[in-house]
Image 1 (tube, rainbow, N blue to C red):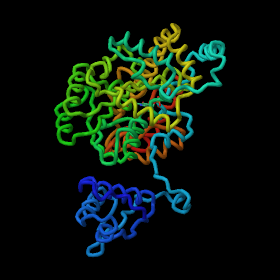
Image 2: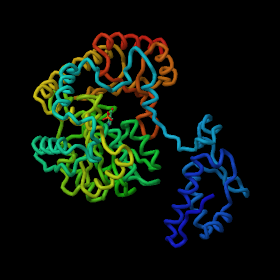
Image 3: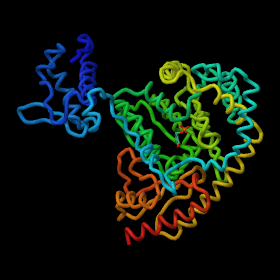
Image 4: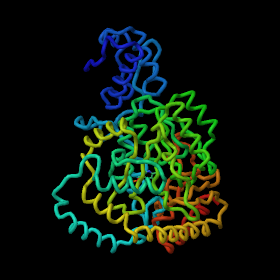
Length: 473
Ligand SMILES: Cc1ncc(COP(=O)(O)O)c(C=O)c1O
């Protein structure tokens, strides 16, 4: 056992270090389920700390369901925290186990993929995009022989700085922009940089499922905030900020995934002020602000921010060119320095070719015109879906943009049965519980209307609805 406890640190820090030490080893499977852990006395001697300090660490592990106590005998590893069977048998694998609930669902092959909140590739101007690829090679003949800088291509960052300054009339310098390989990478990097075990992280309930997995992997203590068609209850947010002093609030406030809800403009400014007052960072994940059906959504939170509390993630991947996987993070210099270090340890820069193609494609007039067509095509698909669903008693609130319907099924639904039978019928959807930080919402489902064409949407929904009525008459 390696001893890495610093005896001179104050006792609060010491107890945290001992907690981390034990937690890390339990997760790696160094102690197996139901195995007895070292006694309080033994650890206190080993680390030259007071017994109470070790006791406090064990108490927290117990509270977090990592260990249990047997009277007069000591602490034991709670089953369920160990490595999966394959990994346990293989001593070479001693990594942490990461959950990625959504990607598991996406791995299922099906004819009617309502689980994919991705764009139908037929809705993109593919031939036009490939013309751009050729043009980029003419413009930058050495592009394949060059790495990007870690922060991202300067020409692209300058163009984005100009675009945001014009669009939202707010100052954003190219120095404050980092290009990432999709917004998923941005969430992951931010979590690595900002969150330590037991930091409190506020998440919307429900939220984008992989964000729960990322913050949980960091060991965050997750506190949910309900999101409704009217935004948040600001009194509740303030109360939670006061009570928990959270490190950050990860939010997806515009055409939210999975609900489609949008936080209204009047709440945005108040929340930015509140975050500054309670020193809680806001991570604003904005992945589809251009996919609106009637009017454009309110300006992002980050345009209201003057004190640097909002970190803005903007994906261009979902509806511009998923194959290029381009996103950006805008934040203040202090955070940027750490993000750059994390990014350089991850991939030392998003591929330059992708950045150059994106730069010329995104800012072209044709692309901007294409967005208009895309909005119409998606609005039609949403209407088709709502038309088919109107034959049921299911409930949802019609989104003003985005890719998904967040559907409330009758309370009598047994989700495991519905999931298994749907798979047999080659139909996939996202079960609500994986979007819920509390892992509840068992009668909610997310169905996307963006990936299937109009005919597949109708056919798939008819099959799904009839399957449902057979299962739960
Ligand atoms: C809210 C949200 N954040 C992040 C992502 C990941 O997007 P990207 O393709 O840019 O990694 C998605 C994709 O579905 C999303 O809906």
